[in-house]
Image 1 (spheres, helix red, strand yellow):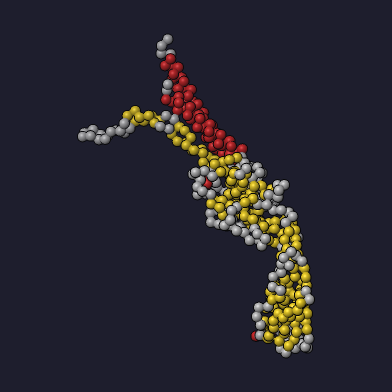
Image 2 (cartoon, rainbow, N blue to C red):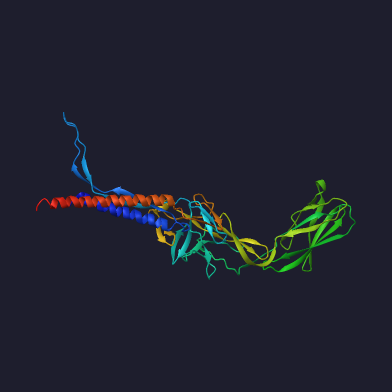
Length: 390
């Protein structure tokens, strides 16, 4: 049989693959996080009809004569260029700006995806549309995240409650330097670790030019310290002031004459509060807002990067799995080098370029037609050969 016949067949197969890849790209033009693919061709082995020879004496050298045997698909590569951003306004929609991947777990298998459309399931877990559970680090009761630990499922239980114990009380205002001898009392409400409130009374007793500070907590009165006049009307504490393990900050209290305006500026504790909503920080932290006004980190989303992202294998559901040529997964968080940042309320759209894909359709179609013409022409040649003997 003619070599051109089989070359044409290989061309048909290769351009059919190009049509398949292009058609899949166009079909996923609106798939969030989808990365377009492209087809690379290369020629196959060539048949040697004459070898090369070196110049000898008065004879020049000759080049090799080879006849190609067709084309084959060298590979289908994935383009991981950044897709455009689409604002959705949904708190559970997330977009990576950079080269990182979300990490999900489905059926015990670790998957990686660029599609950040997440929702809550019945178990209060953040999951992808195909049921993959978003992975990250859960914060402790103080909102601290240990990124050195193992990643796990991210769960935001709507019944989560926290209470912040009071560790600091701040007072502001002025104690009159020319006031009569007496006592000024200020009552501040503080909270313990379970959110139980109690009142602490801070008493300021004038002692000459100084002010002695005492505190009454639950019927027990203790000496806190002494305030003495400083430079520029400021009052200086005799040392660190505290009561029942709570620091008392009087650094903003002044001692000018003619005015008594001492007030409780605030304290950092709070009663128990229930989780109401959450926001996503640029570093991947999920920050919960509680009914008591407290904001605290609940978890941190883990992101992955690879030495060779093009080596990842598509696993369906807009997800990938690591392969021997992608390199080992490197876990980190948003903001780490080579990973990128996170944005909430947005999704990364497909990076398919329709104008390029339609051009590829034309190229593939014309290539298919040209190779089909090779086959018909070869067939006509064979028919002529068959007609030589009648």
